[in-house]
Image (cartoon, rainbow, N blue to C red; front, side, top):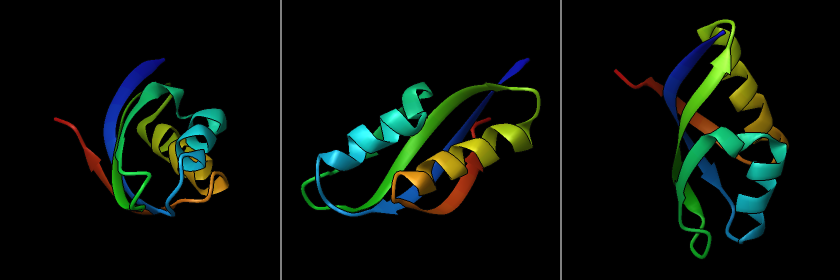
Length: 78
């Protein structure tokens, strides 16, 4: 397997529970930049191990959606 690095830009509601929900959904391989007091936009930087880039990104998006966030953009980290 290969490690893929990418950013997911997202929008989430306010509340500390969002950060916990993302971690529990599987974002334990991401660094999340998000203001839980204000809510709104955030960025998660991933180093995700997967068999392909599409699998890595799709799984992160699905996990984020299951935690109640809306993904707006994906960008590759060079």
